[in-house]
Length: 432
Image (cartoon, rainbow, N blue to C red; front, top):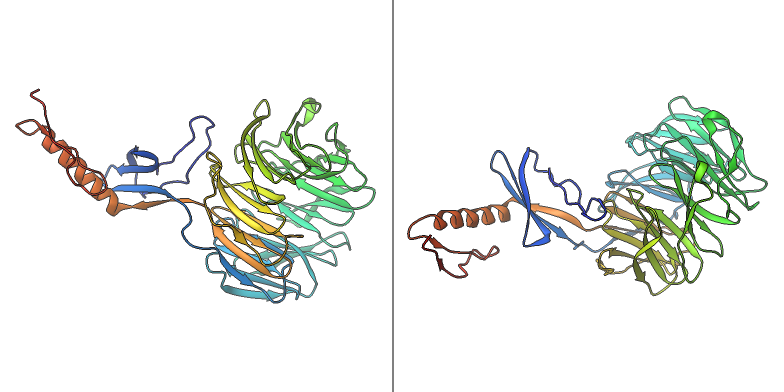
C-alpha cells in the first residue's frame, strides 16, 4: 500500500491506498490530490482525493433515540431507543439489520473498539455486555442502582468506564470484576473520561472539582490542574500525558499531567467554548465555541492558531477526521458540515436535522459519521476519501510508455501527451 502524509506535521492525509501487492513506487500526478502507484507485478492504480458525492442518508425511529454509536469501521450503527430496544442499522443505507429488546429502560451504549462487544447501560444501573454481531448477552455487572449515564472502552476493549449519577467505576471486561474502588464527588458527576492507556480516569463534578484517579493502583485522587472549577468536558491526548479542558465561562486550555501540572496552553475564543478534541497524533486541537467559530491549534509546545472556520451559529461540537485533513462540526441549530482544514472551505453541503440540537449525539468512526437527536431523527454521511481506478492508471501508464519509446527512437523525437485524454500537445526535436 501507499499513503499520503503532511510533510509539515507528519499527519496522515489518506488512509492506506491498498493494491493488495507490494508497491514498487508511488508518485503525485500533476497535483497533491492524485497519486499513481505501481506494484512489482506491473499493476498500476490512479488514486484521487474525492469529496462526498452522495447526499446524507436520513431516517427517523418513531421510538426516539437514547444513544447511538458507530462500529469501529463505520459499517454498522447501534441505536438504543426509548422502547428498551437495541437496533443494528446498516452504516450506508440506515436500513435495519436486527433488533433485540432488553427488560430495563436503556440509558447509554458504547462499542468496543475491537468490535467484540456492545456495552449497554440501563436506568436501573445494570451494565449488559452483548457479543457482536449477534447481540448475544455475555455478562451483566454493576455495583450501583443509579442510571448509567455514559460508557467508554479503552482502545483494546479490556477496560470499561461506567459513569453513574454520583460515581464512576472502572471494569475488567474479561472478568466483569471492578478495577479499584468507585470514584465519586459531592453531588453528581458532570463528565468522566478514561485515558487511552486505560490507567487513568478524570472526573468532573458539580462540586466544581476535577479529580485524577489511578483505579488499578487504588491511589487517592489528585487535583488535575490549577484552573479546574466548573469544567464542562476534558479529553486526553493519545499519549495520556496531557489534557484538553473545556471550562465554563473561560478559555479552553491544554494542561500537562504529573510533575508538569502547572504548565498549560490557553486557547482563546471570543465566547465560551462548548467542545474540543485532539487529533490522532496529539499535535493539534480543535475547539468549538459560542463565538460561531471552530479553531484548529498546534499545541506541541506553544498554542499556535492554524485555522479559524466561521459558522452561521454557535458551534456545539467538532472533531478531526481520521486522516487529520478534515473537520466535522455541528452547530446549535443542528447543522453539520465537513471542512478542509488547510483551506477552511466546506467540502459538503450542510446536513440539517429536523430537530434543534439540544442533547444531540454524534458518532465519528473511520470515514463515516452519524448525527442523531432525541426525537429519533438521524443522518449519516462520509468524509472525503481516496478512490482508486486501475482503468485510469492503465491509460496513464500507456501514455508514459509511448513517451519513453518515442523519446529514444530515431530521429530523437519527443512527444508529450496530455495525461487525461492522451492527445499530443506538441512535438520537440533534440539532436542529442
